[in-house]
Image (tube, rainbow, N blue to C red):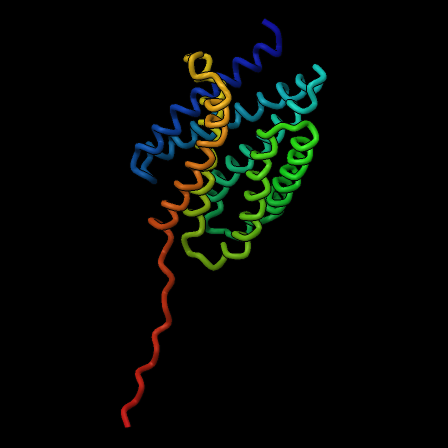
Length: 232
């Protein structure tokens, strides 16, 4: 077995483990020991996915496929960002300034810059997938910069950061399964409509899930009380 085949096997196996442990963690009581254990397993599986994705990206570049290499590298950056956010939001929940430190700022800038680069490549090579997916990095970076100004003002900021990053992780995990794994299991699902649904439906569902979670867990703003008007 070649080194490339080993990395592919690691990538696919870790991705399958991530898919299973994501739903297992989602079904467990949040904050319970089992939830934390399965959540750590999920994040470790995603780290293997990211690490094994680097040589796969380099191999595409060596094979003379710069567009594929650029897009895969961009996807690794997106997934790496949400994995980092979901981990550090728990580790740094008592230290918001540390959470929004140098690494956070670098990721907040790297994602929109990479998104703009992918947009340029997509337009140059007339690739609708790259053009559409470039918005993910641009919007993710813009949201991180917006959230950075608000995190210190919210007592439960870490919870919103954590579940927001986890729905991003869910999108990455399910895009991989729907676009790569499922068509191999069910070849009849292949086609342009299924192709674009596999890439964009998980992202749309992740956005809707975050909106729903924000309404459920974000504290309602406290309205200032007006002083009673004294009677004459």
